[in-house]
Image (cartoon, rainbow, N blue to C red):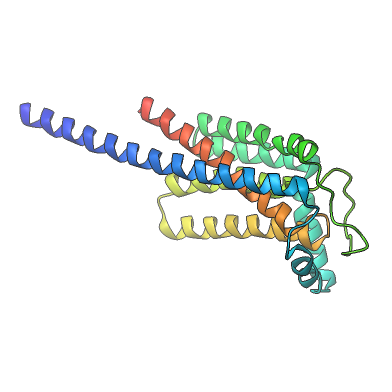
Length: 229
């Protein structure tokens, strides 16, 4: 009994130290992403576009294809506006069914957090690309920075990817799902630039801010799991 007790104690100590190290890395990642997000946002306040934005957009729009256009429009439609709310609900239901109620609640929280892009657009006030500079292939009315689609993609799909990474045991299945989610996150950002509704720096800003919020949620989830396991 005494030997078993010592093993349990040292095992608990090891797991606790491992958790502390992981949380320290998360906090560091959160801090770096937050600083980068703030710096980029400040630059966006004073610059309608960044160096390289126009060139990258024109290069991307040179892929003149009806198929590419259809794919980009479809991706932007699915992950924007009222449809994005349905995506959150659908993902939440799947997570509740296959993973757990608390994880599904976090998906709902992530969906609400994604609305921060509305506030940031108002505060930063950066205009979208002008039709005199690039081809506008979709109609958008509000400001450009950050890209709400990119922020949503990293936050919602990134959280789903995290749950897949820690919960799915089959390596091949995990790799396939994660590859699809990562490709989708990248495609969403590319679609916004291709359609002429965002500069690449708007998308990068969305990724950074979404990543900051995602890191905070993952840290919260780990702390909650540690206190309830």
